[in-house]
Length: 166
Image 1 (tube, rainbow, N blue to C red):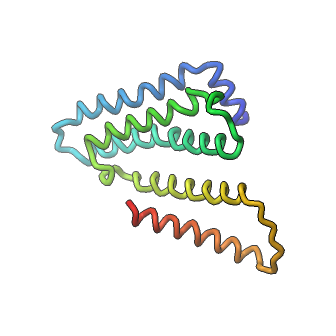
Image 2 (cartoon, one colour):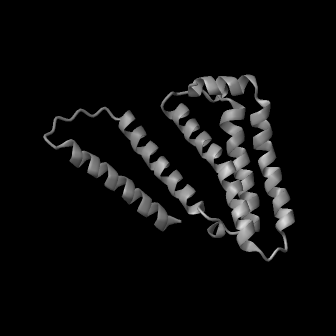
Image 3 (cartoon, rainbow, N blue to C red):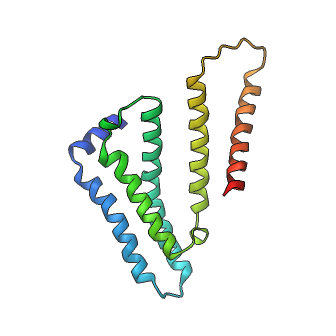
């Protein structure tokens, strides 16, 4: 099954995906009500970690998919699939806001890994978009390993700058 076939299937049968993305903020809200006043922060941080991953993996994928489709494929915003391209992002935003109101993100195990991954993906897409837009032809004797090392150092510099910014 290809990604296109999966998207076609979900487009033909949208209710399971829509139910999942609508249910996640309600589950987050409900857990926030149940966890209010509890002294067991470690237990609830693991519950919130499961929710964060359940909402962020499809949400981050939808963000990356939208960036790819709009920048590289030049898809019109009028042709966007609401269930696959916007609902996961909206669900992720609402759920993360609800979680942040109850517990700081630094107490959620693995949350820093998601933001680091998103930063790396954003930097990589930005560099790819830059190279896609320029028409540069270079005849050089520089080995490919040096160019690859420069690319990796650029990504590390972007990651370091991002961590200092936030």
